[in-house]
Length: 279
Image (cartoon, rainbow, N blue to C red; front, side):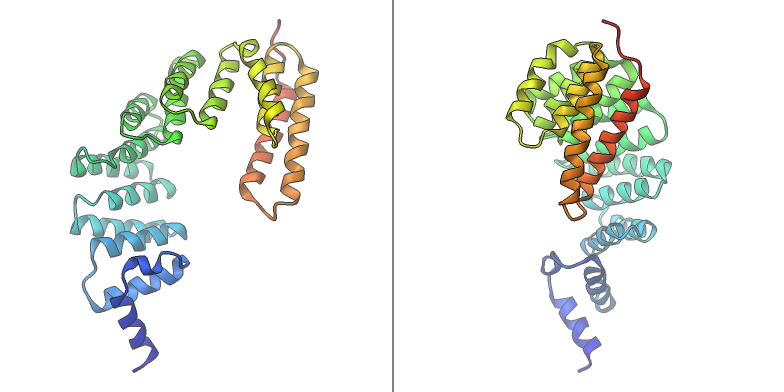
């Protein structure tokens, strides 16, 4: 038996979870072998679409997701994959249409919150903030909404109705989910809403308790700037940048840390350009 024939047999016999920890190319080859010997299933096509998306091959991924949906119109994961692939490919109107088709097909299933979240993201990309806020509200009303959805909902509320609306949305989110990420977002929104002095003691307390202080130092800088202390604000922001530089230098290419450093440098630049709030 040839090696190619052996691969066909292995791929056909192995369940998809057998390839769970392989790189995308390996999984794609295995599924290609499987579907060359037997009819493709919606699960096969959805999994291959996921791996193609991981390689940024969004057009091919979208084609697989569409075929999966043809085989199983209620396949929530295929609908989600198609929406994500179209968003990543910059086909925002197509992603919005795909989200609407998904909502019509899957109904009120446990995963529908993610569909509404993708619809909200698509609405934002096409510039419809009102529709985006409505979709985020549906997403966060689902069971166990993700923190990212709660943050995005608050941000959408802020864009439409100002910092006070963002602050109210984050306060409501915190009542349901005590995430540190949400708490930091609430503090930042409080500063934007003119309540810097109210949250300053909490920021200072967190600085004393934290090993990695950069995120709190940046909030401290924002608060100090808001209450008319521009020099202290620049010092706090510069300290945050220096800490992140040290961490990046020993991280071995940690992209998350590099992103935080870039964001911190942006805060420093903005504080240098923005006049302090008058006390």
